[in-house]
Image (tube, rainbow, N blue to C red; front, side, top):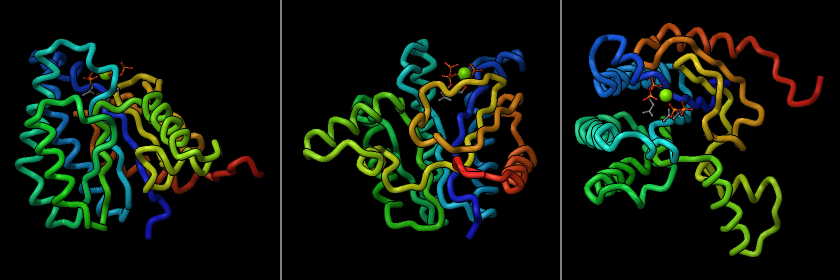
Length: 225
Ligand code: IPE
Ligand code: IPE
Ligand code: MG
């Protein structure tokens, strides 16, 4: 078992990458998918159990409709092409975020992909879609209130979308900005954070491996000495 149990990634920089290549922002989104596949390979090889990927935030609805639709179509295409592979490779896909508002066709594919892989054990991918940490926390508090439970750390943990995972050991953000953009605010209280200058489509297996190795050398105190 790897000492790294959970890696979370804010995959940022696709749009700028597409424009830098004198193509469209959407061209960058497609290129970003190849990076996802490469990162998956390394994650499996390193025997990491949980990978959380930020793919669409609750704030991303502010983008042009054309870009949003492109992202949804890309996701559909990815799942249709890859879900059998995920299943075969013992990978579980879980959506975190509110998927109810997505187009019906997409919801169906998301549900099917989750169902097909639900018993898988090697790696769990949490795909954050229409995800916002503040919404997630509000939801958790509502559930706790409804169940008449105490507000404490354990009950908050148990009522988040990530109730079935340990907290991330590592948070990576590509794209040369140092902010969290409403991602896993509760869960990353003690994560080691790596901000990477590279745009997501340029992020390589080697960049990722170096971060994982660097993490292993960090002394984590959790408040102790
Ligand atoms: C990808 O990067 C993240 C998504 C919301 C899909 P961006 O689309 O934010 O790319 P930049 O940051 O504008 O370059
Ligand atoms: C964060 O990236 C969301 C995802 C990677 C899905 P954004 O590009 O939306 O973040 P901001 O708006 O620049 O903070
Ligand atoms: Mg961005």
